[in-house]
Image (cartoon, rainbow, N blue to C red; front, side):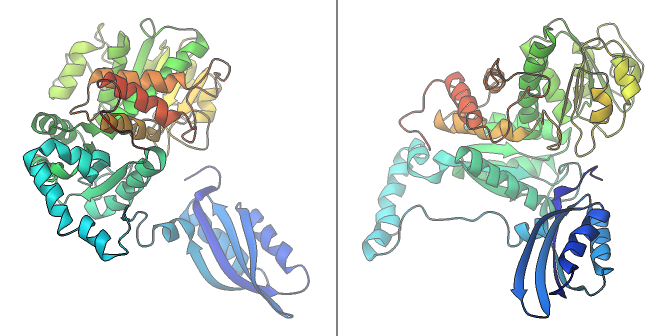
Length: 469
């Protein structure tokens, strides 16, 4: 449940009230007394006796929204006609559409866009397949692929339920980087089927964005697709998260005056995101790390290690700590959580080193209350939009793919990820940097361009013959 009313639980109540007296003020008081916030009040029909009004208000969750409706209904003389959930209204019919970039108003235009003229273009590509990047949507298209096995924090809810999220991802690609992205939700969670399906779909795309595929399946899918395809494959839950965490931590350590190679980092979460964050932090110079999962610290003496956990055990926790997360955070300079809600308290954060940095990124409920963490840590970041320092993957993936597509890259390298993180961190100037501003807003106009330029340079310089707006 959200601690304060949020627009994501916004409702519009259409109702009628008496045209005279205090009816309108009673409406706002009823909402406020129920703990909601009135964000708009529109008279849609007026008469001498009655007014029809649309009251829009923010709630904390669906139960709270119903409580607000009940409060309105209890006001004498009010008749409620309809209650609309604004989030569901936004999703009616889907959030994206396909539009033609060329006019089709005359026979001539039709003859060039389609038959017979299009045959010449098809034959040119048949002779030189690389021309597909120049003459088709491939040059600016990304497939957003999910099997619905790890959607947001909702778990394995399946491909149909994943579709609204993948649509949203496609909309973000377009909004922040001008990229045409296509949601592809697969009705299989078999690694072989996922890999083969993406392989046969790949000719129509310039890149593959894997999304919300659970670990350890996602590691195998990504590895095999990278071996098979000649276009970049990027798992945003892993690498997008890692880029944003490294960028934010780079700036957080500037705030507290510590060096990445010297700090002790405790991580909670050894899944897809946690493993990717770990690898990128180590590539950037982090040396002293302990990773914990729900069984406690990952160490070489555990008998339950799969391949991924074994790699973690071999490359972290040099002293062989075998206790729980609470013990692991004692004396740590940095905590990074990509795991589960409420697993630490403010008292646990109080045991960290002076000038502690806390990234509690479980969403919507962080690993530790941000308010409690702020009592003891110097810098706190979350995945939430209602606190400062939101770590949001939209800071990374649009710019990363913009750079990859512009460079006509065939793959993603660790150096590209590091370059993206450095560029994202650098968007925050020395004058702006502070405990409550270590990472730019997702709406900062320089973010996507800076990340794209860094990735493009790392991928081989400027775009080959074109720049996509």
